[in-house]
Length: 136
Image (cartoon, rainbow, N blue to C red; front, top):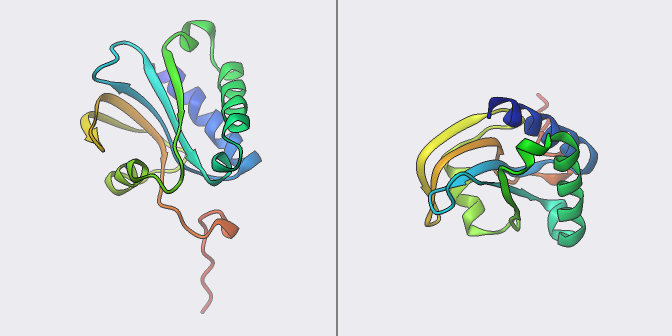
């Protein structure tokens, strides 16, 4: 699983560089879906063309993972940036281009047996992609 997560970290970083930052990018094992994982993503560019975004994310993930890793994925879930369920993740943990493992958690009524948050960050100034320059 570690290798698969490392590959997804690289893919997330690449997509963020190409299209813009993610608010959420996570691999989640739901309690009601044993042995298959959901890839959950949210970004401002996803909401503009959901079908196109799904195709893009799917293609990037498919090209990065081996066939035996791909069969572990149940689905790709795209979340709108203003979704209340996104806020639940963002309030719980903050990480960007990394890996935070979660276990036995619940977010917006969704029971998660295990998960890996690759990016979970609050929405900020989209012009600076979350970076705010300070001057004295």
